[in-house]
Image (cartoon, rainbow over all chains, first blue to last red; front, side, top):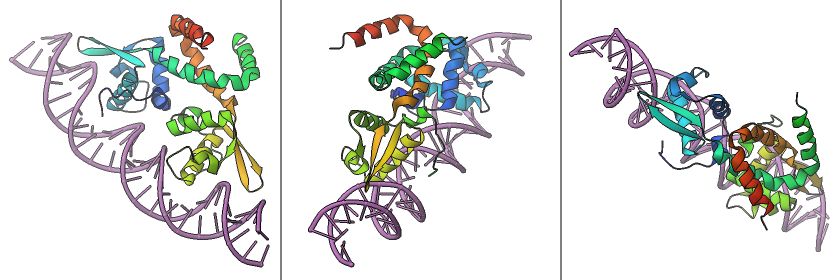
Length: 106
Length: 106
DNA sequence: TTGACATGCAACCTTTAGGTTTCGTATTTT
DNA sequence: AAAATACGAAACCTAAAGGTTGCATGTCAA
């Protein structure tokens, strides 16, 4: 698997496993082994997913002794936000609805 | 290929071809044959992509004589918006920057 | 009613995605 | 020094994704 090919972000978040990883890493950074306890697959598989997220610059790595802590790096999500914003003009009323829903969530 | 399995939207927009289709259909609805003139692939291939977008409810179809007009149906993108909103808290400053950028686009 | 057009389905092929196990190498701990 | 831990790379497998061509069908125009 390639090193720094910067695959597009849309592909990176397409996989539900990777989306869950982002959610977990948002709460708290952690090394691979610990992260992989949340998934029904091998550590190596988790490691591969992390590589993809890392290439897309959605997570960053910080080496600390023998472990490497992975951390959410949400800046690249802006690209997604921008893409979305183009389509917002087509459903403005619905957006107002959602805004209301989110604000009154609890 | 399945009929109405409602594949998740993240997977539907993962493919660059499908994203371009959404952009084109946003500008104006059109039948398969016309849409496929924008892509270096067969009409059947385009038709398959449309099926995926249709299953994800990102496009709707309206039969009109012997042709079927495909049309953007952006409502489902709300799911994406909701997902994104969770991560916004982690880059509020950048968001402000983007907001400024978008507002002063022209 | 015959010919052209618009479309989707079926069968097939090739590449990629996601997963496994095995191994090598740092780093810690004892 | 030796044993344990954390990790990624390599080689491999299977299923799914994206593409092709060749029908079959429905509709429109002559």
